[in-house]
Image (cartoon, rainbow, N blue to C red; front, side, top):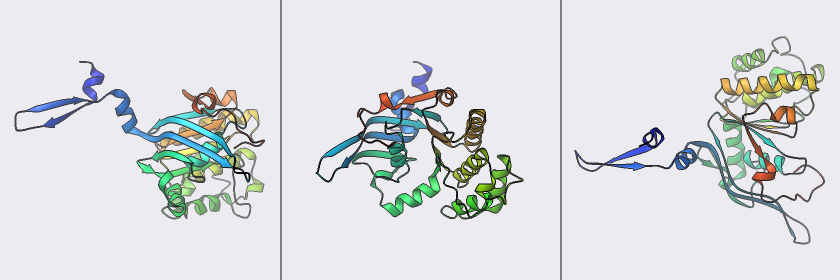
Length: 261
């Protein structure tokens, strides 16, 4: 018997001396251990005419605990729509999305909001920092939707991201790279199980992109958070061991929108 088969076995006892060994196929074990599981996920939009416009048709996607995955695809391929579904910002037309065993597709909007605050971190392409608040305050505000503000941990995060001398600076006083690090600190502040990053280097110059990706991957690994990063930049995609292509993942290849969806 292979070592893999032995490692995937379960024993059921029947009596004091009798045991039946049940071997679980490796693909089933992988599915059971996945942090993120998508099954038969579909998303479509309804036009005023009643016509249904299909956007996503994804039969299966799994991401393991602590795994780091790059999602590649051209503009308009549905990458942002997929992230919005995973974050509970949108709801699917049909299908299942399970994160850490929770079916977010079946949650109410308030339940999805609470789940997002406590289980997910989101790094937006435009960072979405509040302009009237400092770097530290932006991170603390993000914590208010989770377990609550923790000045010590927020300061530690920003310090580890090289912003110890920028805690009181507002976004307009920071460089694009510094804003990106504040956004990453906010995404990690509630110790999420998974971080979703939507083109996080899109506003950075080429010289800072690689540093930003390296930093993001290191900090996610440090906090044992999985990472799903969306990008169409080959230089960014090349930094990841596992790359998922939207052209292969999404059976609905045509997105009928002029903007990224």
